[in-house]
Each structure stands twice: as structure tokens, then as C-alpha cells.
Image 1 (cartoon, rainbow, N blue to C red):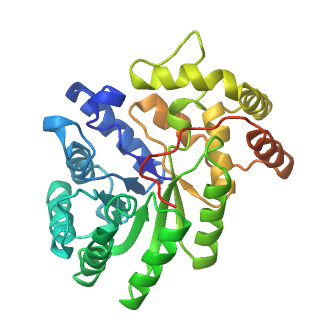
Image 2 (image 1 turned 180 degrees about the horizontal axis):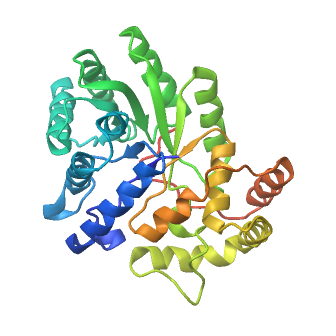
Amino acid sequence: MGLGTWSWGNQLLWGYDESMDPELQELFDLMVKSGVNLFDTADSYGTGRLNGRSEQLLGRFIRENPSSAAVRDNLHVATKFATYPWRIFPSSIVSACKQSLERLGTDQLAVGQLHWSASNYAPWQEGALQTGLADCYEQGLVKAVGVSNYGPKQLKKVHAALLEREVPLASAQIQYSLLSCGSQQESLKALCDDLGIAVIAYSPLALGVLSGNYSMDNLPEGPRGLLFKQLLPEVQPLISVIDAIAEERQKTPSQVCLNFLMCQGTIPIPGTKSLSQAEENLGALGWKLDSGELTELKTTAAGLKRGMVQNIFQTA
């Protein structure tokens, strides 16, 4: 399991405020102390004047972490380069990578990723993006490369293109949870398994729908509240199963859902913006759901009439 930092700097959806920074650093230190060493960010995380804030905070927290140099050296930062319409040359991605490295205060990323594919709206841009990603690898700016929001068709293409440059595709981020495990996600995961590509599951708690913290009488503020109001009544059969397993296991719903994803062989990266969330997420480690529980969760999820809204940047 890793840690996602989308909320760090995002005011619109997650209500970020700079007064939160001390607690963010505290939860980061806790995760490191507990053995978590994968931290996912992006150059587009942060709204308005706070654009890039997530990378800046992550870099600062790593530098100021009280662990030994050996522990800090084993922390893996994966960032994503936004497929902006003006990034039309390979050098655009290389430049974006160097800017991320500067914000993070390091000279090499563990994983550099394309945040989404341009194939849906500017397919001619794809070649430059893939070439730029391979250039980052060859120049030693990243140890490994990955993609995010690529469907099976586009994943095959980028895998083949990188292979021609002898650049292995290490990871693929997909929206994957008990509410995002339909046929497209499953076929994509199967393809990743066949190609030896690690699956990083983002939004593993479906923006909090599966966290156990919300109900129709307790909705989150902002855009999420509107989504939850529509979705919560539709997914109650699944929530009931999650709650029952959580009670039997003496775990929380979040811990059950994260453990489920790890049992599927994926690496969930739950977003965390408070110390209590970090402590709860860590409770998903060190145990495993049994086969009966996994089957019940899968079957119930598959029987829902409605699941999570999929990312608009997800391609075929």
C-alpha cells in the first residue's frame, strides 16, 4: 500500500488550507515509520496559486523526515505529468519532469508517469508523450515509467512503443475499487498481469463513499456531496456486506476495502489528509480477507445497478 497526495493543495474538492501542513507532515512521518514507502503525486495537484503544492510538500517532508538516511533513500516517489495541450514535443515531457524534480528537491524519480492519454481528443500528441517519457528514462531522470488512466487498447500501444526503445512499462494507475471493478477495469488488470505491469489503484475508497464515514444524513460538502447523494442509496447492499465483515473482523470499512484491493494484487494509494486517516489506513496491513469474504464482496459489487462515476480521462 502507498499513499496518495491528490488532496495536498486541492482546495476545490478537498478543502486544503496551508494550516493543514503540520498535520500532513505528521501523518507522512507516521506512514514512513510504519514502513509505507510509495508516495504518489502529480505536477497538476494543487489549485490556482497552489499548483504543484503536493510535490513541494512531499519533497519538504522527505527532507525533514527524522528517519535515517537509509530509510529516506528507500522512499519511492511516483509523480505524474499532465497531458496539457501545449505539451506537444518530447522535450515538453522532459521539461515537465525536470520541473517536478525541482519541486520535489531530488535528482531522480522512482516512477515518472503520463497522467492521462490524449488519444480521445488529440491522438497525434501520443507519440510525443511516449517519446518524452522514454527520454526521461534514458536520461536517468526516472528509475521507471508508468501511465495513468490508459485503457487496454491504449495500454498495449504505449507498452509496445516503449518496448521499441527498450524501456519497460512498470506501472499503470487505474480507478479501481469495489465500486470501480467493472469489465473494463478487470480486463485492464488482466492485461497488466499478463504484461508484468504493476497495477496502482487510485480512488480505492471511491472518493470516500466506501469509507464508512458518510450517510444520507451526513454528506460531505462541495461536489462530492452531490455525487454521494445520488450514489449512496444505490450501493447500500455492498456497504452492508462491508460493514458486516468489518464488524466480524473488528476492522473499519476502509480497512476492509483496502485489504480487498491488496488481495487482488494491486497497490492501493488511498488519499490521506489527516493523522486519523493515516492511522486507520495502516490498519489495512498485516492481515488478509479469506476466500469466502472476497467472493461475497465481489459478487455483491457485481450485482449493483450503479457503480462509481469513471474518470473522464479514462481511455479505451
